[in-house]
Image (cartoon, rainbow, N blue to C red; front, top):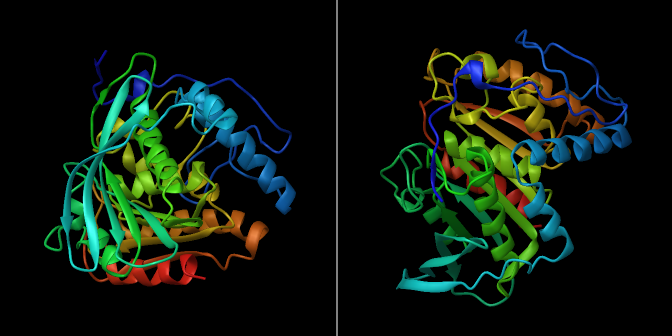
Length: 335
């Protein structure tokens, strides 16, 4: 069954009441003045890990993914991929394939997979498009994504991209953000089954909604060793002002802001890109990004002395900086 989902109104968000862990405060305000009840307030790596484990459990539950995650934790093959190659194209140094695979027992997804023509194991990156994009657009150098998936493929990475821009819930009982995230997790799972992929060298990157989903994948899937989130670092307050509300779901904005989700990535490598020409409302301006990064660094200071979370302000607008992203992945995924 496909259920139509409109962008959520603010009044539709339900208060989440599930509590966990002694490290979770009753409420806290970040540097942008937002109140979020489940912000990390610990002072040790152990407290950070406990908060991250509890927060992921809470969010998977609110995204209505707990059943899929539980089955997957027991058996990664609980949902056979049954992958099928739909087309294949020789790109010189790599092969580009369009594939189809099972995301859930009742739903299949399509993806673009690139594989280098080299021997041995390669690092792999999940490449994520934004609103109005497709799995193909991250390969287009003329797009806002600057062809970053193509660049990575030419540098010897395995890449995969799928469609996450839908605004309808495909399966009854799911959530929009949950289905978007689950499809990315399944793409990651599929990468780990490929002989050519080094499962210890996985990353993800994206722009706009793709930057948001890179944030979510990096936060919720600890296999991501490096995350590039471009054109998204902001606050819940800003996203409530003129943006499509597809980012929210029951239990999220009542308890968190986006810096809390980025904090789930600590101490793994994180690069956030923001354009100096971004403006508010409607955009992702640097002043809000600086404030959000200050909050993110509180978690990184506990987990890794703040060395692996970076905010890059570039001179353009709402675009992905491909060369910078590739250098980041070369540094953190190629060792």
